[in-house]
Image (cartoon, rainbow, N blue to C red; front, side, top):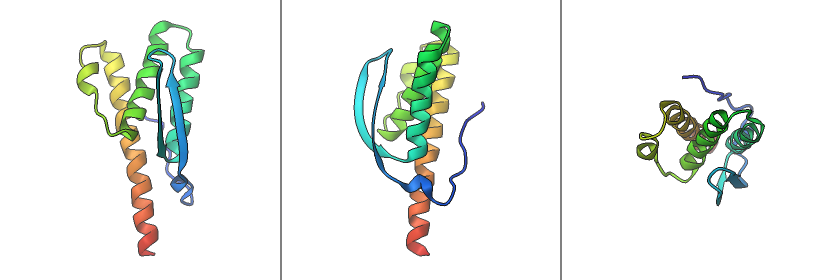
Length: 116
């Protein structure tokens, strides 16, 4: 499985900003605080959902974005995607695991800053 995670540069990922996103397919709205990289990744998924040429492609991007969002909210819905198409389940899991990783990077950077 491929991911789009890039390593943080000069602790820029530690900036907390409000996140408000919406997936057109599910029309879910929420707010949270998280890293700039995670916000950018969710926005990228939303943009790709809108640009998708097929419904299948759009659903894949939306599932990935929902996985990223669920990582922020600490909500694991892999069991719900287990009954969908395998490609959607993979995209959700990829988004969820990447989101968890991006959040861990922020936590590690904060802890490191406190030590240094």
